[in-house]
Length: 492
Image (cartoon, rainbow, N blue to C red; front, side, top):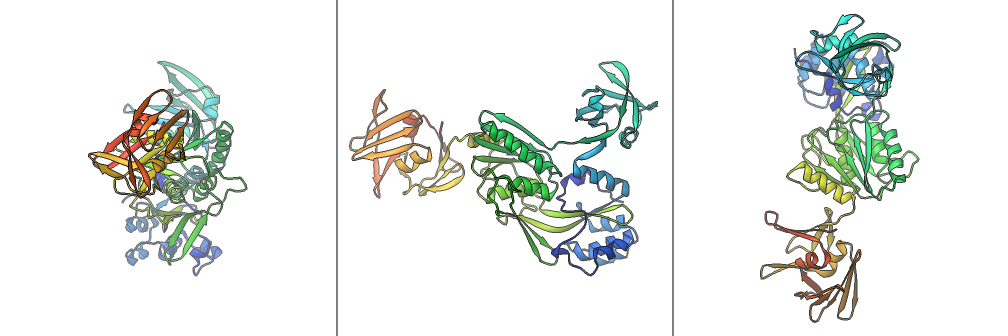
């Protein structure tokens, strides 16, 4: 019999622990549903809420696990009462135990790979310590599940541990207690704030808001939101994060159910003023899934952020975790979700603002964007350029003359952030500390330190300059992308 791993909980966008709301209007009330045996509850849920086609004969099966397996949906599965309790603790972000992560090596040894603020850390244990025995029971030689079961327990349980560190063994007593698993991590790189989210749990939205306050107080002028390897999580927390970044009322997600009904969710900052101004880039990769994808897509759709990285996982369906009458649980696919701009995410992934050959290039571009470095793309023949992946008019199209590309003086200069002033046949450009003056009659150029001359072209009343002018006089980097047939300018 096929068995889905508990790890799939990390790839699920969970709305609530019981079906509710207008999209779930059906023949039974919640009270009536709760009176049903667990098997009948599973049959009722599949019949009324499962969004994909299935063979109705499976509803005659007498085992919830068999029904789940017959649906052949990796995201729909049955869990035991014990597994249900574990999943509920994972969703909240709080667990009872030693307060650590472990790794299991090829020799069957269990060691500490990460420590949280919890019992093990308070007892002086360190990353790399190896578990030898617990309560006089030797651990090496046992399976990982057997070792973990011996280390687990209830709050207040005392574990008498023998550990090994750098070849030496020592003993300690550790009392199991509740510990919190953080999901929001941050740093400052110059003026750019960096926030990574590992999963959307109950406290993620709250912690994200607190981190935003810290970064804003530190003078953040740009933001990177790193959702790489984030598998999703709770809808409520995902909405709270988006609510910190976009204007109140911005469409964030649409969910479409079996009966065709649609529920929309709009951004709400929860009383705080959202930060809608600093340049922002979102990073995704092939392990960004579900809630992480709709957060990235909605920030893209609203124009709040660019999205860079690689093709995301492409999970755009929603599950409900339903606690059954015997304490077991059932995960059921109940809806497909779309971003605030109706991006179809399922089996497609998130739209990227630009595709790069490597993740390192994408990360570099994200930091450059957040730092306010202009990145301009110009296509010969198009009256529009792209400034940091957003279109803006130049007034007239660039021209190709004798192998050189001429671009509109004002349109490109202002995209780079330069101030342009005309006085008769004289034009001045100021970009940062750089000052350039040009005579439009002769093409003579001066920056106060040296003089030169540039070719000029006038079209439809617009002055066009060779694109290399911006490299020579304003210290921009200029590249020609032959495959995309475009010019790239990068400011300083």
